[in-house]
Image (cartoon, rainbow, N blue to C red; front, side):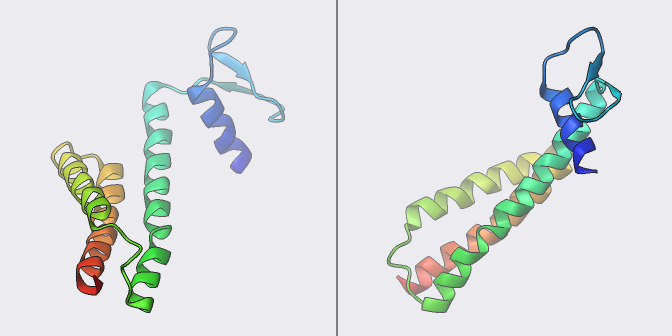
Length: 123
């Protein structure tokens, strides 16, 4: 399954050769270049997964902040900017009805708001 996903990504973002049919090394079969809708679908899935991972990788910072009750190593300005940036893109995602952006930046707003609150609380 991972082979097929990587093949689709290679076809989606790679150069087109020999018309619309491309042989992907190791796949053992010919794969057709995906349509624009399929390309967007793969990109949307990738953005959604990366957005979830972005929030997951922010969790250790949250745990360290509230566990140690020390915000001396964190910048309120930086985390406030991340929060403001995520809010703007969340609003854009909602207004344009783009689910990957809503998931990515919605979870980011939540995580960054928790950090900003902790920095204010423990500074």
